[in-house]
Image 1 (cartoon, one colour):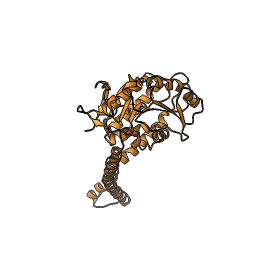
Image 2 (cartoon, one colour):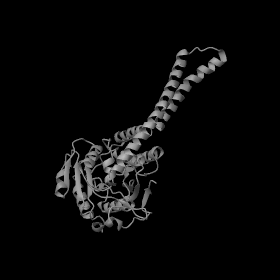
Image 3 (cartoon, rainbow, N blue to C red):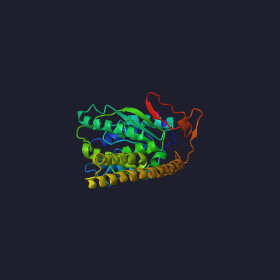
Image 4 (spheres, one colour):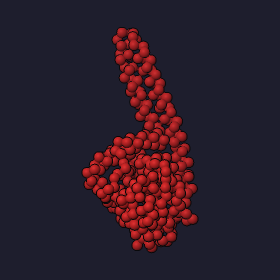
Length: 347
């Protein structure tokens, strides 16, 4: 079915890998069977095993990226490769290649810029329960700060339009890259969707590269930095309120003593309280100014995003049903039932 539906479209399957020799051959073979017309790229991130050789033997184009970290690999992939659709997965075999056509078809039939394969069964493996708990905390934090577009911001199985790939700055260096992708889509109000997919177990001999505390700290730091850059009024507003509360904590006892006795015996404390109050006002003022600049940056990013064609050499049009299509073959693609894809579309 995928041959006819995707005819004329250049699809790139991109697989970041680090020491995945046990699984990469099977993953590449799976994507070659699921998407016969797609080009498959394996980006080897300094693997010390036979990942590159086994990927090449399976028929993938192997590219080496020496900067360590998934974020560096994604930046390189989106820079190097020209395609109409990008499909990203992991090389560890936890994502089924058979689900790839469904992700791509959802992207096309809905006119989305990104479709995220949310993970069913992520807690089935006891070794993942700690990671799953952390995921739920970060997902709630994301919803509170950036909006309700996504329920699984750490999924590595995603389909992207060319417009997303070529407008994505990819600042992150490690596993926090998926968070940055989600924020990029939310801030530019791109049309996105989620598709619930099964999440498999790693085979014996394959180990997770994710460090619960180290990578968790990096992701938390990335949340703070992205909040500062994209929601400065909220970021500096909270900081201002905290500083003001600290100021009042020192100020109230001094004022209480003054009203009772008419004396200020703790002058250093009073000076500290006033200094903190002035800092709170300055931080709040800075947040107001930076919020105006962030809005200007958003407009520039949106203009850049709109200047990129959805597919190379093609104009996409909207049909009467409101679907965005690139050619007749895509227009004939069957739509994904609404119950299968959680979409967040922008008016």
